[in-house]
Length: 170
Length: 293
Image (tube, rainbow over all chains, first blue to last red; front, side):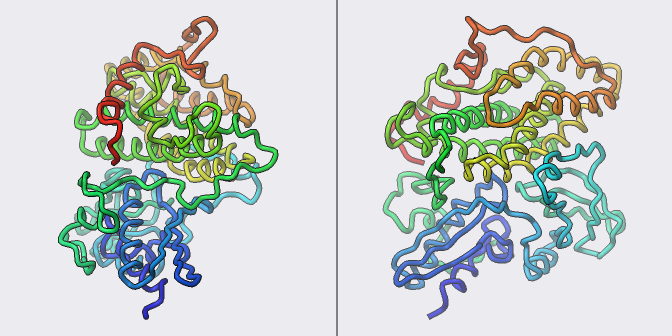
């Protein structure tokens, strides 16, 4: 029998079906006790509408794989960060034409409550080092801070001129 | 793009109702509890009634303002603004769902009939039971008002959420921590538009200033809360003043919108705009009260 983790980890993301929920860091934990499987997931954004489909799909895959009692749990803390996208996930997204932030690009909260209290206002468009997933150029520009899903922004390559999506550093 | 499907279902709609027998709705029996599997026990030393009240206030702010933002969809000047406003409204709706679910779980007795959850709180409360600030319910008259109100709302909410990350209830703290980067992103977006309009043409400047002038009477009420955090007024006003300076607009000096017999939005006393929001938000749920979705 395939392990419960392997079954759950193969679940594609409904919005980004080229990667799995494990690649994206949404699937946090799968534990088995007797007949009972508990899969723990964390939402990327508060309003991510894919969580319902992910829950249904995880449940269905685990039931189909022969685990009779399936529980899907939400974990809110620590909050999801784009740093949790795996190297494999980054590679698959890039091959599908979606750029990802470099690991560790997300500004981390300070060590003390005082240090992490205030988020600085950014009045100019953010300029992360976004590499074009199509031609590899680093001459890219943000065309919109939001895109078709909560986790992405729109960019354009200044060299090959192709537009592409970028998973926001979050 | 084809979704890889090795689950034996013809389409995703079948899959959503595959593991139960409810086919009444295209998307199955619906929304899972946003706090499914989260330990919602109220910790010792936390006043459950006050926690529920605070979550209701913050949840109602997000729910009602999200609805007002959603009303912009298909009416915005550019496609990029459509996706921006839709995504911002979606983030706020997600925050509202978690906060209303937290309110219902924290205090199932006093204000909330047993067995209620986020849906009952959203769809079956009367206007006087909503605890949102009056800034949230206003209808924007133009895009400048959208930008100005989003800046004020997100700067204020971000300051609250940054403090609530350290609050005693771990569920509210986690919801706040999750909301911080979302609200910071909303605030940046709004601030750039306020500057672009305020520092743009004579007409855009004039309309940006007018928007702030009409919104300002609703700002004072934001700083009246009894949330378990330190006062945010100074910090929020400093952020706003910084943006206003870059935008070349002045901070309005108009007097706060008055209370009615001492009561304001947090007390359930709303402006005329609120009834229109609730009529649209609640009519389907009230017409089909036994429906699930």
